[in-house]
Length: 129
Image (tube, rainbow, N blue to C red; front, side, top):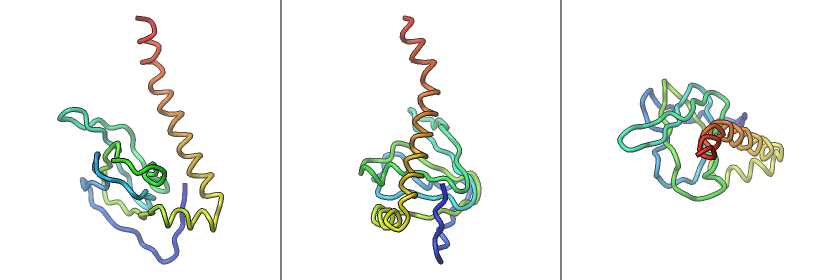
């Protein structure tokens, strides 16, 4: 999903820096302009990698729709540049370009499908017992 900005350069993070920490309050999403990040879920004392996201993708978009603590952390795999989009900015951009809302829903739908595919084997195993 692409969101082009006029004159905004975004913020640069270095390798190993946390863009999002699991459990922190959330009020914005991010568009990855350059680089890659890993999505990590804390499990006890460890972090489990859920996904890797790269240039052009959005992360943290649930914060635009519901104000809850971040469900996972995001750490930079190298130098990363991101554009921060808060709810007000998102709604303004959707007003200017309604197809943006469709692209965000499309992204969310794809991720729900990916998660469903990942948990299906566990559901089948549980049903057999």
